[in-house]
Image 1 (cartoon, rainbow, N blue to C red):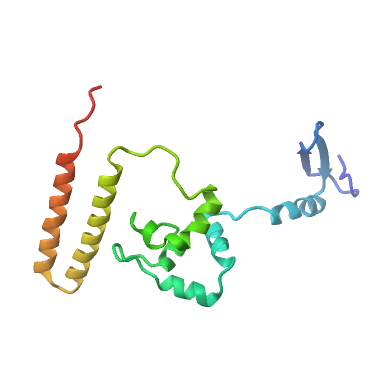
Image 2: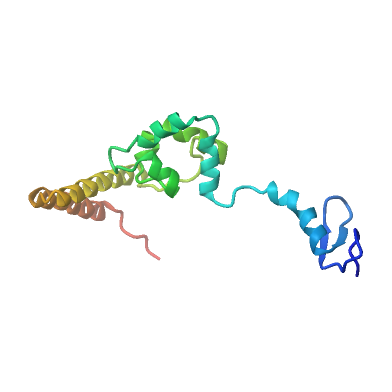
Length: 176
């Protein structure tokens, strides 16, 4: 079979379903590349990070973005720069710390800024405990880095106390 636009052999057979009837195209490699190139340029970014980067490019100057990148969470210590590059926040408190900066992104991705789905029953208690554990672990790491082992052991004991308390506070498993 020959290409529909030239005399070369057709190596690409494309079926489009744009209307009621499918349309078949038989194209050579050159014409297929030209035909498919505009569609490839309109494709969305390949990753979450690409979409994230596009969100922050809109409406922010380099100076604003540089200032925002320096902002850090007081609990887990993650900076906005680290969030932009990793695509993940460090702790639940980051949603509060970076709230006004994240709101346009969350609104664009989800269409709303309020959670409307189900939540675990222990959500509020576990959220506060997780935030506290993250803060204590960060402080313990800093104490070890400073070689302040007495403070690190105090923080370790606090972490164990919270972890053991959460294990005893958890409801018993439901019978099968």
